[in-house]
Length: 460
Image 1: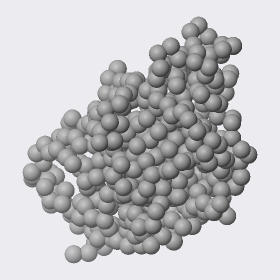
Image 2: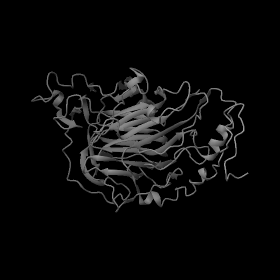
Image 3: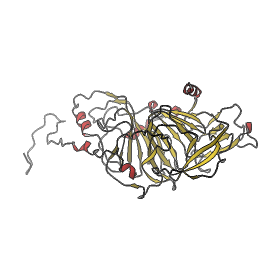
Image 4: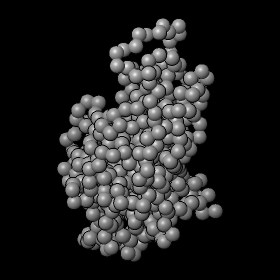
């Protein structure tokens, strides 16, 4: 009954990058200015900035929060005890290794002992440094209980959450989000949030970016429409908690380390807010894919949902790309992803279903990493099954699947525990070992082939 009531109260605002306004009590937003001498209802005005004050207007992100008590009202931060030893935000030889080998992990077990989102979060790989404001980290989480009397704040960067098992009920300073597998949520740097688990056990993926924010990719020749529509991104509406909350804990991630501070109230005491710096969610099933309609295979970048750009045009700090249900219609074309080596590095995850290029071994909740210039592509089973249908390539539809990729121009270092994990698939390379030579001096794609004269030294 309580969950039903919470769902009935849940409301969102539509749009990406909009300047939103929301108030839980009518008249709580000040009129005509941001910081009046006396705010309505005796609230405190507080700004949260996601960019420098002097960033160009089109890039500037900030919101004004009107709260019962300001967030500064807490005791000093102290190192969290016990320390979290599997979070990294500055990648070097002390905490991670380079490894060009194709890597794959089976799904991580969800623990039986009580574990919330913070304790269940661990880094797989990444590059750069949160201190230098350039880089990324890729984490996973496994949890079975909600955060109680505590909130998490990531001072290092933005979180992109991709739940794979179990819904996330996320309380933020701007309001509440319910995020199901097949949806994503972005919590910008600095926002305090708490995660409850309505379904109990939960597992998923997290991308973290330093010194940048996610934005929609340019559409270029596609035109005005397609891919992820701005109106399908949903921001929360104002909702607040009041009253004393003795011993409430703020857990702050700062330089990859965790610190805690005590306060006697909930951080979700924001009665009204306005701005364009805000948490949001998106349903991946609303993505409008574009695809090949005659021949050959489009690059995966055509399926980009969100991108965090670098200063170099067209080069991403991190792209979030999905492989959703869609029709395959290309003629005379090998339809699964082609074999390739890429100057970008690719981390893949599977939310549900099966991935078109891996018939076996790549499981929902699992992951793979193909680093810069490491060759990869369809496994042997997929390749052989595809070319066997050369005379029966009718249009077909991929259904019941949702895979994704975090792609970056930076070369990731892999954490020691990820390389030593019992879930690391040491036989991953075997999926390609069975690929055999189909080479023939007779081109089977041509008819009426004339016999060719045998070259000197050629074997029978």
